Image (cartoon, rainbow, N blue to C red; front, top):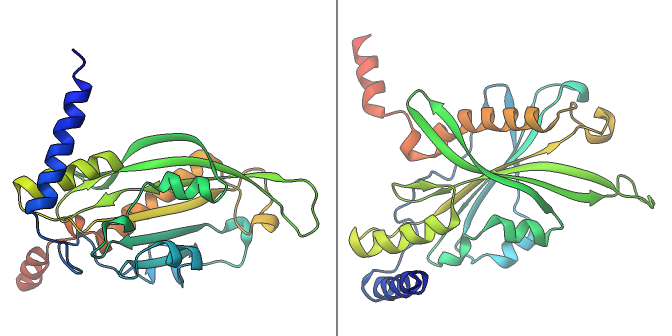
Length: 249
């Protein structure tokens, strides 16, 4: 007998039970992130960005979004790095958080490869993230008749009250399981970092230094390592330790 239908049936029963007995997620409950991004970190300066109209139109009104464009401080495009960081935090409606692949393909991107990779935030603490290698055709200038292929890495993960996962399916399973058996209703957040692979473009064309795929991922993971402790609670430096060190001095 094929066990898959039994698993699906069991999951459906658990999901129904969760909806019956779990309390409604309320705004501000169980967030594993703070909705603030630093204005500067390491060698980067951050410029706040506004959510675009499509994001606001598609997401529930109580969804919180913070966006920052991080760039190195230089006037020379041949030395410049640039990345876009976003955190989306669900409100009372859970449809704020979804599979990023859906939005990316809707924006014209094709997914060339997808893989889960570890990022060491600090010794002994590793964050698993999902890396999407994506591509889309673009016109560089108005009036161009031929397109060029722009590639990028889009890296994301999901943060609950006290859990983190790079998998959308695992997020759904954790929501159901923890609601029923731990009485925890996760208010999910969805951080992401995106940067273009600038190989094949001149710095003057793209406004950044020339980076291949591996160099772009090195930049992204380095930025994640710097940023995550500033907004994700389970990677934040314990305050008690900081106070204890200060007391000794």
